[in-house]
Length: 238
Image: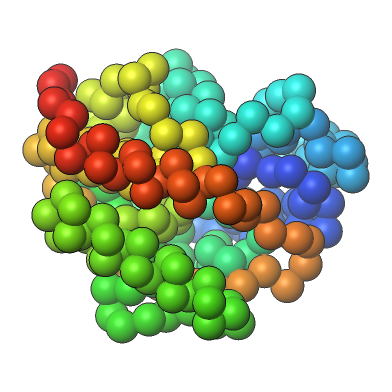
């Protein structure tokens, strides 16, 4: 199996080397694609400095300026499909997603029959560490809102720690994905669900970043709120 972990970065110089070593040190033959949006802090330089050591397993795409989380992943998905990867992962650079959980997500797809495995903060209560209570409430009730509006039985629809089987990304019309921020995660999961794929939630513990700064902004919540309503009335086809 060829397994690719896509990690978007913007000003993650404190975390870049550590997350790369943590992921590439795992069993299972994981590879990494870093997509850096012109980080002024030197994140891309750190990645380039490690490419010789991890030759063939660490790739870097540099983009000119911040273009949004969703567009980074869509770029990465297309890159992975062109190169024949079997399983493709979304993951943050800041250790809020534990690298040690990657094999569990892979197992849910490769062995247990899921087409998409979601690292879920909310399928077994609330498993979030060191987040402000206000942010926990926003995140948790965003998923409640999605379930109510869409009738979508996923507890953590905004999760960004995911394993996709190749057939999901091959089937979704990536050029037609509309939401680029917080709502991107909802749209990808709901689209896969509507196309008949099997989604599984794998319980994980989400730990707030210790280094670097959050990239969250108020505008992406508005996109998600209205985007979910639009999803309710969209037709889906393969």
